Amino acid sequence: MYHGGTNFGRTSSSYFITGYYDQAPLDEYGLLRQPKYGHLKELHAAIKSSANPLLQGKQTILSLGPMQQAYVFEDANNGCVAFLVNNDAKASQIQFRNNAYSLSPKSIGILQNCKNLIYETAKVNVKMNTRVTTPVQVFNVPDNWNLFRETIPAFPGTSLKTNALLEHTNLTKDKTDYLWYTSSFKLDSPCTNPSIYTESSGHVVHVFVNNALAGSGHGSRDIRVVKLQAPVSLINGQNNISILSGMVGLPDSGAYMERRSYGLTKVQISCGGTKPIDLSRSQWGYSVGLLGEKVRLYQWKNLNRVKWSMNKAGLIKNRPLAWYKTTFDGPNGDGPVGLHMSSMGKGEIWVNGESIGRYWVSFLTPAGQPSQSIYHIPRAFLKPSGNLLVVFEEEGGDPLGISLNTISVVGSSQAQSQFS
Image 1: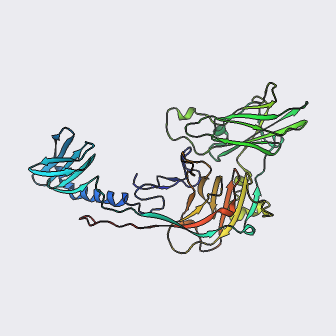
Image 2: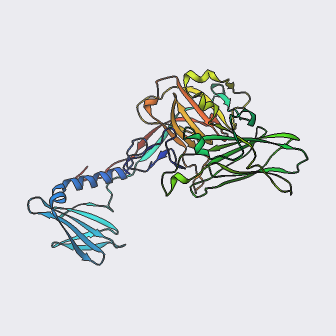
Image 3: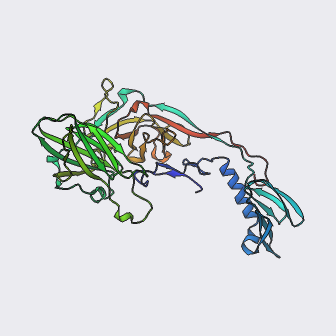
């Protein structure tokens, strides 16, 4: 792929980060990534300079050694171009039409007029550049943030009820990532060391018992079933279970995608060493999406549809299922802009009502680093001042650590070349 990009909104496929193919010659922000861009530019120029023999000449393949070949395109009226191929893991001296050429290991050389070596894949004339992020604003003033806690639905308030655990995407119709499963059960006798066990074929689960978060879990491209065992606090009498199932995009490949199912598949309550209570076929109620989504809380005109809380004694931090809002001024200049979200967990970001995509900073790479921490804000989404930033956080994070950054590149130069 020649350029990277951004999966704005909910457009990414399952488990794909918001910024895709950022290592391309043109990165996610449209900036040149050297030496890839310059080296590829030289290749394009070399190919273009020999367009006539490539398109109109006759192809001939010659053996120049046990692991060396020449692909020749030649026409009496349109000239000649040759591609010398060295498949050996060692450098090779090649004789072609009475001329000697030295080719690097595992490389291809392009001979203009079948004589002049104008390009070799293994020789890079362009120096590496470095992408730099510069913080221009840190959102570390508590009084500038407001908080709204997402409502956790209970079984009696749901309109759809059934004695089964229904499939996630059949209910959400891809209008939202989220589906609430709600139920209740009556505890008539003491329960020692109570715990809840869930299995889900969705991507993420957040389990609440009596409105308290019991635990969260997520899968991956390799782990298709999310299993969660967590201790809970139960009361004598009626206990409420609310489980938020989340998706992070839909599948983009593979056989029989239409047959795949997602969502909660098993729920059990355990009391010490006794036999688990299986609630999978109990009566379940369903609520599609979040309240903040339904009222479009990320738009200016809808901010007053809920009651926002001011930050009090640090209570704004580490709150699951929390909506945060603040305002900021657009940075000077016309270069790319991004939000550094390393202090947060997982959720979605809106700027002036436009979703700049999901974020999932807590999903780590095999090296233990966030899969992505900076999220692109297109300049077209920004105003000079008074921009609205709304963040929905699933897991719990610290919005005071979010920063606004400008992105630039430094240190790129290109050695002398006939294509420079």
